[in-house]
Length: 284
Ligand code: FES
Image (cartoon, rainbow, N blue to C red; front, side):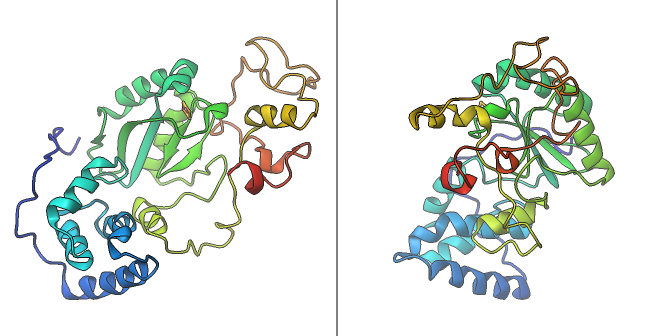
């Protein structure tokens, strides 16, 4: 790893923070004013502005916090309090790919803990640490509301569903080698800085990215079907080693547990039997 784990300082950042280069400052200031104009009170723009400065350096630096404070009329202590509260803001330089393994309850029992342990060993890093080549930062993450695809791995906040220790290992190997990886659903993967800019509220201009949708899965929608008086599917998940009711002979059994990195799976958005219509109405 590039550095030993550092304790997060909850106090004031050391001042004065170095200034952005003039060109960077001018560009960020124009972007920041566009963001601030969306809110009736400027301080409401703090969260997107923190994403904006994160899109510049890959983390929220002291310079970034001072920039946010200046433009919003806040103190650096107020900005620091927010930046240290939310885990989506990084406080130090990190990897190109943030690989988050959900180890919240359901994912943990479905294999998330095993995935995290395997990746720690494979990458030689611990939680919130970065590989020596600067490619991967590994971290525990909490539930991402994708429990019906457990266990879930997120890369730069894109979903990689139904993972196994083996598929997750291949995933990080592909990222390190620069091979293209496809999230199970949603937009194509982009860099951490690009993700931060999208989270700041700027459009994702990659062709097809906006149209790509990650909706609720069949297991999540059973309750909706019941509420509508519809028949739920006979069984969404069969016990390990058993074939789901109605499954064709070529269907993989749950015991094979194909992960998205092994073989992309259909999502509800492409499910012809989806009962709820467009997933944008129900699943998001
Ligand atoms: S527990 Fe992992 S997505 Fe919900």
